[in-house]
Image (spheres, rainbow, N blue to C red):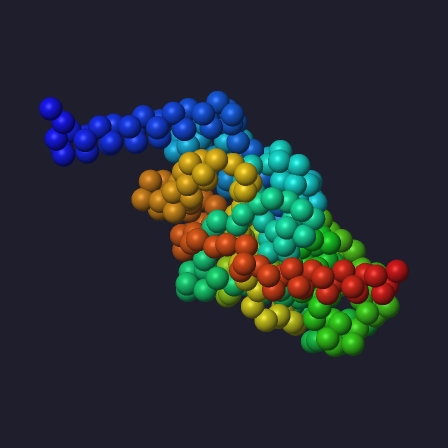
Length: 302
């Protein structure tokens, strides 16, 4: 005879079996997930910092997660647009660009600074012993940007320079795309460029601070002569058409990493970030507008 307890037990058993079947279904479709990262630093540095996260995600999701280090920002955008990259770590402008070019992706996690803020800045570095005190002092000098799809390394700088009434390709002797934030700093270090734009969270964390910890540069050898308004922090995004169960497991893995594998999280940020928090595409509408503005500048130039 059926009673309420029997019905509840049967419903629970059905839910478990349905969930298990759904999991087996997506695991069959996704025997491997590709995780890509925009090239903010050299490839060996990315591999060292993110390898533990790949191991952690593989264990939590029950399917292999493989790290792909792209040659440039555009490769990550195109990879997600084509559906070949399942999860990606972006900068704000490159994520906005991916949306603008038709990539069906969803931001799900955002980086959080130690002080709880969710933003960073574009700064302009010169050598500490140089005579340059302001952007105006750099007239006729060489400038290093990072990548055409870099927020702090291109789009925000071009927006700021435009507000000052300066056209980079006319004001500077040469404008060079270094390819990564590390390369831009090294170019100033070696004298190839007189100044370089870069990302900077606060006095405790920046690309330059990371480079100092790796023995690649000395923080005190550089000086900041410009700092932008705050930019919304970088997101992680996955393909929108992946199964809901898989996306839920990815989110759960990200948001429980502090409890499940704190060492893997700390390896990425060296203890300089709080845990990831949820985010959505709507938070990057202002960055899409920034990208459109920079696109218009390029059209006027051509």
